[in-house]
Length: 255
Image 1 (cartoon, rainbow, N blue to C red):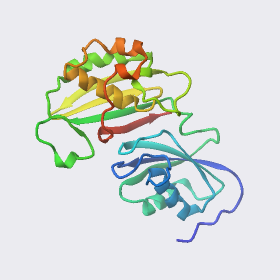
Image 2 (cartoon, one colour; image 1 turned 90 degrees about the vertical axis):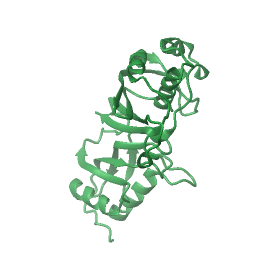
Image 3 (cartoon, helix red, strand yellow; image 1 turned 135 degrees about the vertical axis):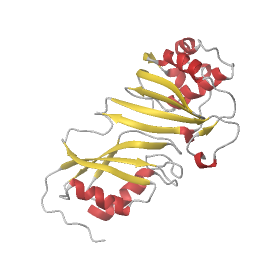
């Protein structure tokens, strides 16, 4: 396809909201020797407007994590209308990535730093028999889960806390490890259990460690009232394991 020509040199900021199946990708951010969502997104964008752009994503996501809503701002001098860009991107993107919305925003908008909160959902298939249609899209957990007990235990996550115990040590995480969790709910619909959490920000692997700790509580290996003690320990070893990525979805980004 020929590039749609740019006609003047005024910078624009376009917010694109996408959804993607992360099963075959190594997260959002471009990496060496690994296919990522950002790489595929930028490759499609380049086919439409050339290399006249910079891209900022709203969050890091790990390998295998999905997104019902992921926001990207594209800085460009190209004049393609935002709605036309959405249609063109959906023509070139693979079936596991879709642009849901495209709109002009102010130049000071940043997909990550303008975000007020994010919501994640973790899905668990809670039945002895696995569901082949949820392979890669929910954790298969064959043992009993008392969702009401876990929901009660999870309320200890709510509020401002130092989540050092719920963060994988990583050079990307620096400074204050305090985050404010707005809500954490555990619900069941048939054999599908969902853990839903919203916060003003998340540390590396924070949601997956929160889920892994709740599963340890379900197993009786951590007491159902022990989450405050784990928070106070400020030690990753005090919490449960990191739950697999397959059940995790970035569900909503709030601005």
